[in-house]
Image (tube, rainbow, N blue to C red; front, top):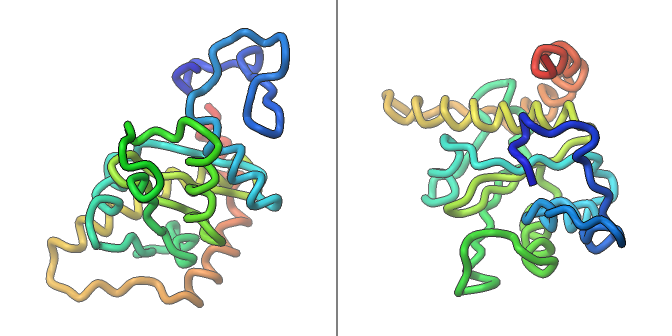
Length: 185
């Protein structure tokens, strides 16, 4: 339970299949670990999950405007970015995914998509690797910012088609290492 930039390898905790610390580990765990655990349970092909409170993405979870891929770096959004409404599961809540049932509901809302928005909270993205999940988190933020800017201009907005999204997503996978090396530094 540290700010991400402060985490070292020694801080990593191993969790069991129910997202609970292994016996004997008395450290305070990350509260919303159930997001990750339940997505891994529902989607065994997923190898990395990133949850963030991205400011540019939050309006898309709080309005009827759908987040859609507006440029090639956000092409993975072709699969959709459904909104998880926590009130549908727990009317009295604090917007946090504090337990397995809420994590499971979020994972179900993600479905086969690469990103799920969380009303009033942020977003969660998945990937085949840590670099891909980080790439998707960063470019979901950038795509949201560009979409918000485009709404200020004369429309309509020409979003990527599903086919363009699939093709661009495949191309982007081949270039993940280039930005990943920079982001690690």
